[in-house]
Length: 355
Image (cartoon, rainbow, N blue to C red):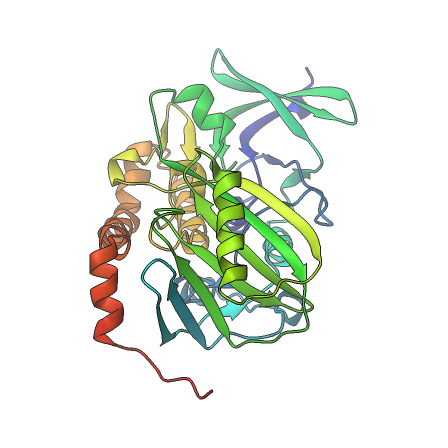
């Protein structure tokens, strides 16, 4: 193996967390490489996601001095959330400040912000990772050709099904859900994002959103019978009077949904986990972009400050743990049917929509 194949840092996966890490990292101090299965053109991107940029994520972009380009945004923009409890037949509207966007374009835009000194490998599937002496050996395949590289530090930015976490932290268990999302042709335009609750279908929630010439129905389900549950949701929507257009696409993925901050995993022994790989996703809304960008930013600080310990990284992550703890409490209240019913019937913070 030539010296060109040996790196200070190997990053697995290039979602929002890794993109911000590679943007903020001092590239002159560390020889770094990032490996991702999707292409820089977006090919291979699958992320069932409502595609809304929440206020916390907007705030993080502002802190990073990043301005969202127009090609990331899609019509219509969102000014309210329509909360629909199908089991109790309750419907309420709440004002919210989300930005409707194309999630794949958002990720590609963030990827473009990475330090140009850092090498990016696209369309690569990581097949194995081993610790050999003081280095991590990573094997990956591109077009049926196998390659091997070594790195002193390993960054797991590879999402909920993180190979890095599964390989080196086998005792860590983060609660997982299955997200299913379908795209339908539609000429409807609505300024409301619909959240759907039904305890008989899922103990999480579903969503209905409009993007350009499509409407999207999606939901997060426990792993058991997720496909059956989705079809049940769609059937209930149709019985409720909703008419879907022609089906154009279907997406499925796994999402982290921590039930306790004790499920989080930051790494160890030269390995650092960021974003969803570490477990940072709000269980109440499944929003993970703000946590991803925050954790990527904080890990860059770890390296830039030359304090390369998980203990220091964990200390920096304290505000994120506190924020996640509050979201876990919110999740327990919001997804308890009787409490949700009381909240919705109280009309606190609701708005009236002109018919």
